[in-house]
Image (cartoon, rainbow, N blue to C red; front, side, top):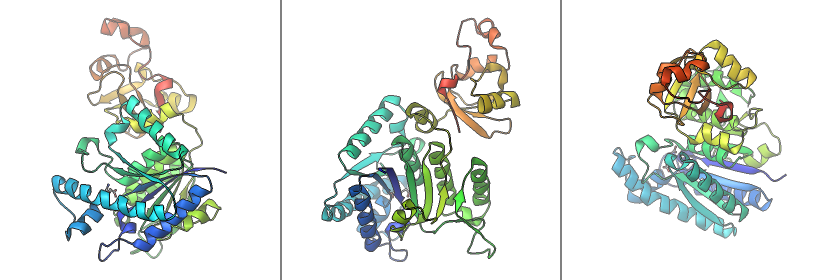
Length: 367
Ligand code: GLU
């Protein structure tokens, strides 16, 4: 079966832990595996970090840059080197590749999102392996993916992938920090949103949560929500990708959530950056979650943020836990006036006839 696979590899797997030099054998094995998967007819996308790390090695810097400008300059040096290495290795196997550098802002505008989507489709149709990284040299703080785990999950959602492999320096997740807690149990399979939320709590509440595990679990949440099966696995053993695809229980595997979302919904949920937060009463939460209803003004107890009409907002329960995302029909000032009121009163309160719903069900995606 032809599948769409997104593989993310981090700097820690691409470089030697002590010297910071490139881990050439890992890169070569990864290139072989990805080329094999391509030759079998699969659509393959590689999300690779390493621009900053390789840039530091090239310039002989002994520590990672601290200022933004230096980091951006070093990434500009490293990204070219990184692609040169990939191109040499892939070319040896006659596998064409492409460089795709993205910033968070590229996914916000619907027209840009669709454009990026089409470019990926064409590259995959041509049998090319796109190699994606954040465009570190121009990214500004407010429009950053921040880390390549998040970037890879958003790319997996964008290309409607079947699998996302997050390759890292641990073999799988554990119920506690295995370095300090002998009772830590390995976690092989995460099946439900509830189980995922529980693991996220363990991750952020322990030392084990640092070193990127929390961002990996958040990435798994984004990807599985978009219907992508996600795996956290050891970066030094790229062969395991083939074994996992053959059904072996390696790493920690997260099952995709069983509610398919279409391309527009994926853009609403993962492309847009929410600018506001609406707190809903229990009735509204139930109507949205269980009955697929639109959000009405009556169910809103509190609002946060300065948003315009048609911006993306988070829909949360009373305690602030996000349950859905959607496009809002009123700006924050008007919504403040009508929240808690019956829909029939909206025109009377605002002095104009607006939409009956605050977030229409067609523009709403459960998270
Ligand atoms: N884009 C960064 C780089 O190439 C890496 C970010 C990350 O690893 O999360 O160095």
